[in-house]
Image (cartoon, rainbow, N blue to C red; front, side, top):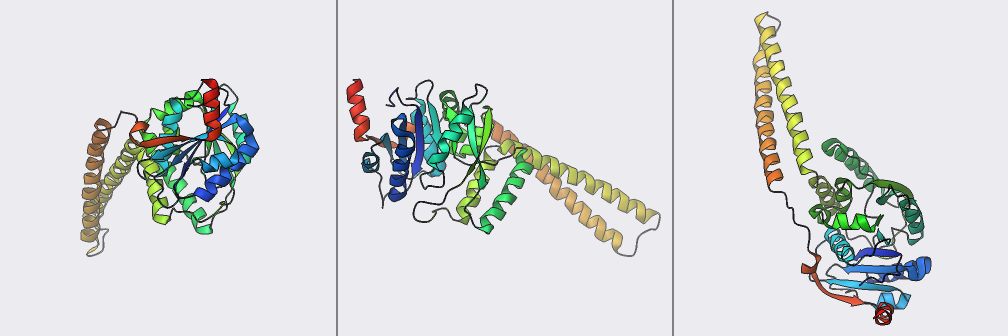
Amino acid sequence: MIPSDTRIVIVTPVYEDFEASSRLFKELQAELGDSVYIVAVDDGSVRQPLDTSGLDEAGARGAVLKLRRNVGHQKAIAIGLGYVSTHVHAGQSIVVMDSDGEDLPASIPQLLKSLQPEQVDVVVARRKSRVETLRFKTFYAIYKRLFRVVTGRTISFGNFMAMKSTGVRRLSAMPELSIHVASAVLASKLRIDTCPLDRGPRYAGQSKMNFVGLALHGFKGMMVFAEDVLVRVGIASAIVAILSVLGGMTAVMLKTIGYSTPGWFSVALGILVLMFMQTGVLSLMTLMLTGVVRSGTVTSELDYRDFIEKVLFSAKADTKLEAAS
């Protein structure tokens, strides 16, 4: 139950990061005071299970959603937003952020200020600066360009965002949300605005996401637009197939009029025929897969209740609930 007098609801996933999340709760309480309600999603932590002690020590109102198992960062956020969507009140703002300190609590007022206009449903943080390695920055730049080529959309933000209550209800009804949060926001057709913000350093420890995990996360972002990706791949394959046919006709014409060296014609024609066959088959496969994706699209929304083992409320939240009752 989210109190009606709450102005800001924070949704943050936590996995084996008790120290960092406890510090985040303190900074959120110091920055936003009693206007904030924190929903922390414990993503099946075993070594450092999350309880309400961090919230109680910070003097913050909030709840800890204990998941039955580890479901991954993106699905944990989707479960948190699903829980919030059923308890949120009109006029409340919802902020999604990581618990490791890279999303700064001091930046939340800037996000909320950009969320005020009536024509804005979601405000996403666009990073002005990153505390990352050169390797990460290089591959991230390549990924953004690849994402734009295969999906036709531009992605330049992550999980740090703020949305209105209407926005969270719409997003929580999208099955794509559990695959990739940022891509689901793009696919939601909500009115999006961007807010340039700096990225902070981690509070403690090291990131648990390795390069393979980051690559998988990136590909999942494209999976949300699987139909568009398949159509674009099919179009590109068809273009190459047509160029192969034109190249083959040109080779035959040059052979006919005698403008070809010995052995050149057979090699060139063989390569072009192989290109045509491969791209032709790929075009047919993408068309078939597009039909499969369209007919097999999941239409049911994620039911967060299936993943939550129990909900723990902070002492301050319990006090408010008792007073309200």
